[in-house]
Image (cartoon, rainbow, N blue to C red; front, side):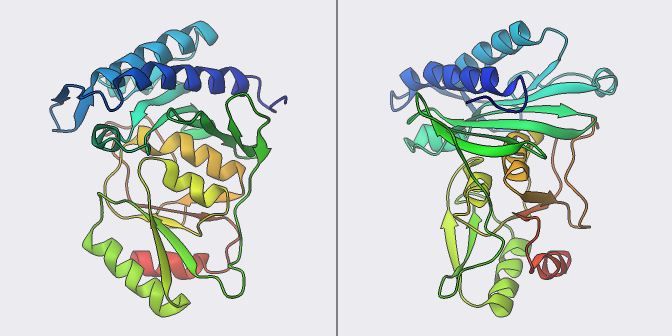
Length: 275
């Protein structure tokens, strides 16, 4: 198929190629090192990083790249960027190390701090998600025809309200939010999954929201935010404003809520998150 943005198809192919570079290291007792912030990094992270940097530079030489594995770029330099690639070569390194399939390659094109589109791919099975605000969103499998995806704005009668959450990261604030949602909307179904796939479950209508009241980095979220926005979703800060990625000094994200943009319970979720 022909995607509505000229860079979407080649970036999907590049994400799949980076996934192929990761796979030889998966479940192979790969050596784990730790960065200054104690987050793990492996040879697989670096192999995917090398593929992405070379591929993106060849695809669009005028667009700079901010990758988790090469993020030491001064804010004074980034402040001059009008658009850039925001990349996580291997999102979910802890899942990768544990042998789980729940890790991804994330690539987002950002312009003036807003995501234009994002690509999220799963190296172990060749599945990918691609989308952007005003462009649409699709889920595809390597070699297959991508199919459009969309959020579900309302929970069907008899179904539980499904909240997707991280296995590894929570906070007292997030637990209070979940308790408040349960009191307002009834018993919750909690779905736990790794990496940026949490956004993708909301984007394809398999879950209703993904609240995150614990730290993340910009490269953890931007690509999947593009997918969700293309599917009719939104990522909001706790004031209700669209989540964005200005070239500020810190690359850490504030808390956010990922949900269908037209959800009737949007106001309630924001109220609970603020409290």
